Image 1 (cartoon, helix red, strand yellow):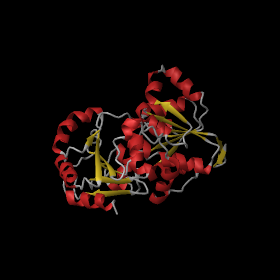
Image 2 (spheres, one colour; image 1 turned 90 degrees about the horizontal axis):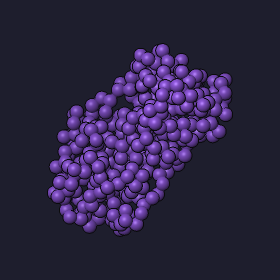
Image 3 (cartoon, one colour; image 1 turned 45 degrees about the vertical axis):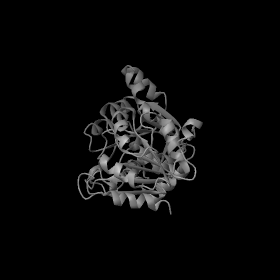
Image 4 (cartoon, one colour; image 1 turned 135 degrees about the vertical axis):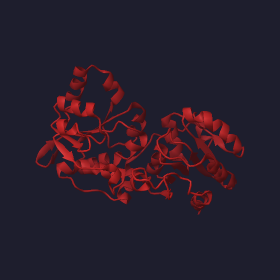
Length: 333
């Protein structure tokens, strides 16, 4: 139990029902709460496919499967949430049905954003946050939801990187067959070219040029991608040296997380695997447009070895192969 703003608080619920990268960037606020109040309980409401990421963070005590909850009749949804004795919900993702459910379940403190009109009805604590116009990184913005509780600290980017170092621990399930793709004595580089439509992508020809220019006596290149993306990637890989290993569509999320933790570096645009790699502490390079709300200011990877390159336009065309090559080969030093 914790005494926060003269209130006894035992249990936080954090609503984050979007994508893997968003969930990764919500972990620091969970870690911060656990560091301040080790005895409190932290639960995340999220989509089922993100559960392996949540399981990798020991600061989170419980997971609520959003799809599973949503399938229940409304009275059972209310009963489910009410039975958990939640004291505070942070609506870090705006969804009216969840805000309404939290009020119906009698959660005493319901913190939302004024950008969602329904929060004026269903929340009793509000913050003003224009995410696209904020000067804060997405991970830092999550801390604003604690301000109504009198917790006004916002960690620096470096502090958040340290949080991941100590509190992001994916299960190492690297089987012998999977481990065989990693080459001792070489820099094992994962190249994740696509983003499932979640962000701007670097041209595939530039990825191919980069890989063809890398000294493959020093680099072992592994291509990753989802099962859906594998259809395109299987053809594209034919342009690459035969030593390049194509793992697209072949890995479960837990396997991919384990592979990332055992690799040396990852290159991607602003997508979930980029944030998983940064949190894992390996070398990470993210490619971003300069555009407001999807730029590096808000979405750069956060980790002890995380870097990014930002274009000068709404796409990534101004990022040259040489710019990326110089960063990645610099990792050998």
